[in-house]
Figure (cartoon, one colour):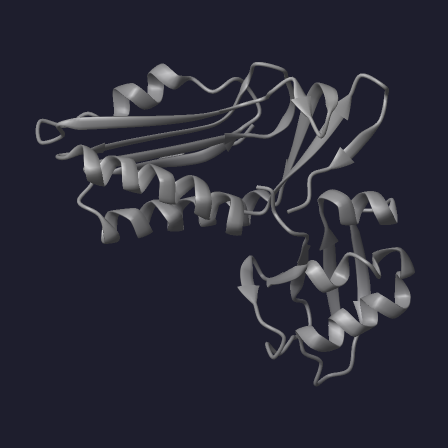
Length: 225
């Protein structure tokens, strides 16, 4: 069978390419692919044990069978201009321009909501004892959008919240710019605070977005958990 493998973030940098077409045995699984990548692409050797895989935009475990024509994404550990998607209760998406916080604040109020909690992730000036000039965010866009939506649905099932907005930047951001904005409305503040905290923790855990720090000395490195 033939599968298309896509590389993101640090994996893409290590290989100098963003995709590869591979031939695998007909009974291949994700585990087979991991072993094949280790042999074919030695630069990935140290990174592969920490990577996950997504098959056709869905996370897959080692036993997942592969089929001819599948698109497989190699997902490095996440550190956590597309169109925003929304319905009556959720607004999510990734954008390649400054986040419009007023748009999110206008979306979440309802007559039942007695609390609105906002979390903003900001590009800070210092990291690891070095001075930062900018951050670059890379993402596996279709899957990232779906995972943001999934997180919004998680908090609506777990807490009594009215509306949820989650927007993340991609591309290169300067110090002081907003990288992620989360706004939650709820009848009570406890649910709003808990939901907002859950969103940012889950986002850093499962959404395929990667962060690269650029420093004043000219160096740059991907942020790995």
